Length: 163
Image 1 (cartoon, rainbow, N blue to C red):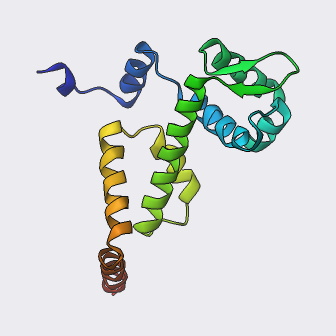
Image 2 (cartoon, rainbow, N blue to C red):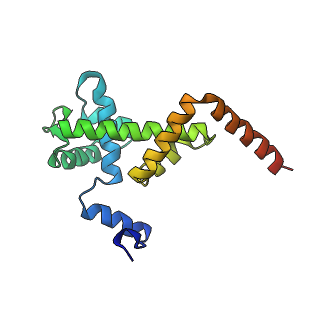
């Protein structure tokens, strides 16, 4: 069996990602939010970050320190948080991934748990799958009649399944 074909448990794939130095889902969440918060004026603060993520400032401080150690941020205790070029690039990519998945889920009609589902999917989707989803989103944007046809099909399908 080729290495890429070896089956792993969910946890096994997560451990494999850690071995290659990938960001954890939590680190991604913080970096994405920092990117959002710094878009306006180039920096944010621990209090603002903690409030945006609904976490304690002490938790935000620990994660910001970890991200600074990874060269994603510039942070000094009690100071502002700024993205490095690497952090800016990664934050932009994470936000684009998030927005693509939100738009895709809306297009297919999955709206009742939109943010929760997006959060779960975004940390577990491969780049290849994300690229395919992104292409489909762009296709539907460029061909709204196809999207409308799909949505009408879904309406008819749900009416039939209620019978």
